Amino acid sequence: NAGVMQNPRHLVRRRGQEARLRCSPMKGHSHVYWYRQLPEEGLKFMVYLQKENIIDESGMPKERFSAEFPKEGPSILRIQQVVRGDSAAYFCASSPGLETQYFGPGTRLLVL
Amino acid sequence: TQLLEQSPQFLSIQEGENLTVYCNSSSVFSSLQWYRQEPGEGPVLLVTVVTGGEVKKLKRLTFQFGDARKDSSLHITAAQPGDTGLYLCAGAVFGNEKLTFGTGTRLTIIP
Image (cartoon, each protein chain N blue to C red):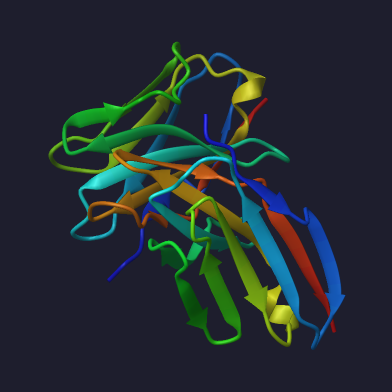
């Protein structure tokens, strides 16, 4: 049973470009979470999705950030018009239901 | 806002020694998870505790959830260099799926 998969593992963007981060949950998991880890800081919750629904986006910045989890395909975290402050590691986690979350290897975003 | 504070922030000990890492909060959690994170990788789940007072053992690692579900500890016996890493606790609140992560303990085991 493959774990949570994220791609790309590393992403370099120039200021103003768009970044698309993909997450494929573990087989049988319908809950997806996105977290951000800024340099020298802890992991912070961003958004929680179930298939085709955003359940909790209380940790998402109000502008430029969006997330989706379509019926088919991976979950996507999109950052429009990236700025240097968006440079961070973005982690996706999945779970079959309550409580335990399993994390992917992360996408390291560097904004030049 | 739930906050989880871990102590110590950094810990460096000799191989073979024992150690305890603490995770404390003023909030009550429905469950608490411990993860270990290696540089450049995602957090890897070690254990989930859900019952107040619960104790779980994973080889040389012993995890305890406080009776009041506000705190937890991780005890490692006879530490080995392979135990080196960043240890994170994370709590979930009743009716809310998102995890609140602790500040982390960076553990280094010296051979």
